[in-house]
Length: 143
Image 1 (tube, one colour):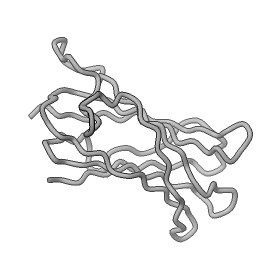
Image 2 (image 1 turned 90 degrees about the vertical axis):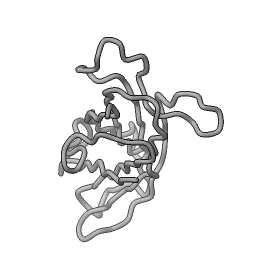
Image 3 (image 1 turned 45 degrees about the horizontal axis):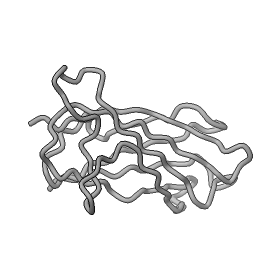
Image 4 (image 1 turned 180 degrees about the horizontal axis):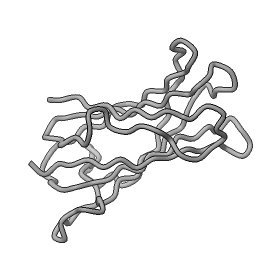
């Protein structure tokens, strides 16, 4: 079982828009039992939310083969239904002059080979209107 990290940073002074970062070490090729964890770094210890919300949306990658039948390689363990959209929260932990939000890991249970894309949206619900940042790295489960 391998562990993969997908690390994002909110640009300093940003009130929303694009995250920087993605999968550490390039595009992972998940195998059965592999897990990946998403972390978001807020660039300051002032003005940061105590809790960051995260929206995980899984879709077919742009370079997926024409015969790929699923848009997501993840399923809920209790009913085997596809996980196309997942909402989660993470509590901030101060690290130096930044705050890091680490979401619970997602595990690939196998049997759905293909090329996928994660669209991740970090959401600060403690502002009005909520601030949002996003990025969409790709990953693979083909081999």
